Image (cartoon, rainbow, N blue to C red; front, side, top):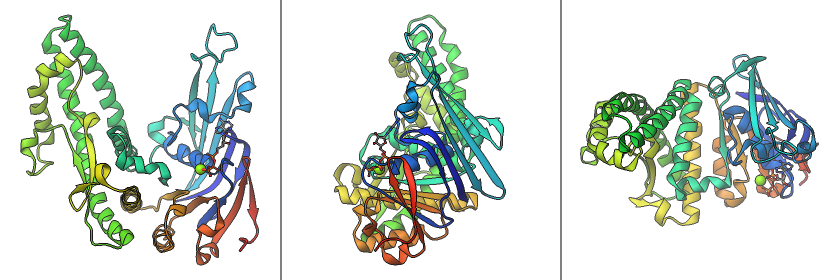
Length: 396
Ligand SMILES: Nc1ncnc2c1ncn2[C@@H]1O[C@H](COP(=O)(O)OP(=O)(O)OP(=O)(O)O)[C@@H](O)[C@H]1O
Ligand SMILES: [Mg+2]
């Protein structure tokens, strides 16, 4: 899989960009705050329709553009897969009615997606272009709250399975309805029996999501364990485990996938009185989590910062292989400033692993980050104030 062209209009600090990365490795060099991460963010956004960091899509529209009557940002990519894929995403800030200049808090961003010229939904686009982003913020996957880990599982699963994304969207609707109903039952405004339908739906869609996540985590666990030993240069054992709320913990250790749905239903039946009291669904993939342990010790809680970084790196390397195995295509790798944190030996290890067949875009502030043998096969661009300039030969 290969990105052959990226076009940006009014995206972050890029007023206008037309960029053709190399087929292999492309390096983006630049001082802090020049737009290196913004560029990788644009590619990630085109692949997943989500920003890895923005709180809202509004942030993505360039500040200068916000002074225009109808501000917009446009992203466009051409990707070589089996055929050529042309992706366009248009973000428009719609004025809010009644507010003075239409820019009040009530204004909102609409997103229009086109794939090969045809209007598409996010669920139709996601999975067509696979990317793996390595970012310094990834460490929160290990050390941060569970919501980030669930998001990670959802995005990665969606990249390999459109059905996963559709089921996830259905699950989220069911969850909302069910929670609403639980509160109505609590207030005696609806009969308890009405819950049965939504409970069955929650169990059906939720158990599918859990089964897919379990399958993926098992693959990541094995590959990440090997990668971690190589990266750390130790024989310490990394284990990644999926923790689910959908079955009674007592049943742990048994064949987890056997009758996941039946167990989830049993669990929901047990929880029902508490759920009504709480007015929300207390079990399901929306409450599940991942744990990372090294030699049995939880790295999120007890790990050093360096150890946490290596764990995430091992996870991302595992993800790269997983996507390739599932889709039959090497994903596009986006390495945002991750090499500078590593020593020379680990840098070489990571580069040898990633550059292996994957188109790679890597950012750094300093060219010294990259080993010379790596520079020899790379195209190098300087990023300055939202503009790119190719450097003929890497300066030494
Ligand atoms: N909506 C926006 N409109 C205009 N500029 C923006 C917008 N959002 C972010 N920026 C600008 O983009 C710049 C940050 O870009 P980016 O995060 O890509 O930097 P970077 O090159 O990755 O830097 P670092 O080396 O520090 O990671 C900042 O100068 C910021 O002001
Ligand atoms: Mg950056």
